[in-house]
Image (cartoon, rainbow, N blue to C red; front, side, top):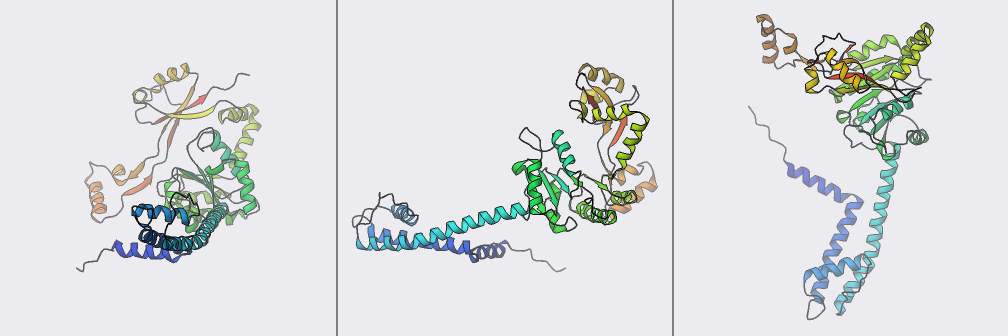
Length: 399
């Protein structure tokens, strides 16, 4: 078998160094460094005590830097003709080189800021929230994430926000003013269907990803198709990050679920359901508003079960929450990764043979995520050892 030689790091490092010196900023830095070396050596040669006033090479370097940057402290001055000639050379060359260097630095900063403003830079974040696409309900989604403490704001929160869309510069600036998250909001401009655009947002390091359907003037079929392409790419780039989204047409929901999206809402479906509830009894809509926290204080919340609580039954947990003014509604089991080992029976010889075939051939035995399981209003005898969290209703305002 032919040995494959591992790539050597030295040529790559050499190419990176030479590449840096080939750009204008690198050339300027090299020229300034060269001038400092020549000035230090020349001044040390001409001005070394007792001919001059310096006693070591560091004194010569100090004079070269002070003269090159036109600071001119005056603590070290040339006493010889050769030293004065060196001073003239350093002052004349230094003014041009330092001015050019600072001008290039300013241009780089302005260019970087312009690219950031246009959404052309790669985002260097972790545990951030990504919203892909934009429509009339995008602002409501951001507001909800902010109210629930997901987004990092001046008052607190955990995650930065990254928006990926094709809005114009003026639209992005208007949106940034409306969201008001300062540097905690980042934009990535481009088509979300392109992998290169998605990679700039670091989806594999995100906390959660949302897919919004196209704007109102978009064709529903085209909008859902773009969402599907985006979902397929995202699931490959970020296999473990939860993805939630919406579709315009109900028949496309199953396609998005097959593409790996954790949950999909059909645009307008909840609206129709709620309108039906209002027709049956208007009080149901008021109750939903309170539960969703749309009428001020109160609203649904969730917290993890402690080890002590997991040893209880639902009936034993209720009094503890009610004593704090909270109303438990149900328990939840977090999403779990499923594999063939979880599905196949260990006591079955046939199942074990199938598992061995998969393992010996090197095939993936992972089946995907089971998805979160919620049990609403469980019986009092329900044991909580297999659940991870409890969903409850916080107290509302007294009216």
